[in-house]
Image (cartoon, rainbow, N blue to C red; front, side, top):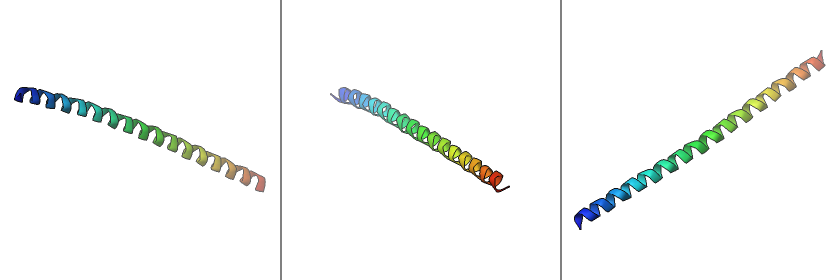
Length: 61
């Protein structure tokens, strides 16, 4: 009975650690994708802003 309980607890811990690892990696992947997307959008908006400023400077001449 005691060895069966120990084996059951061992399998429970292994399954929980596997599940936790999967959740952790899913969380990191989502955060990484969002951060990359946000960085890309910031870069695009920054480049558009610079282009607009250059156009205004050329029109002012």
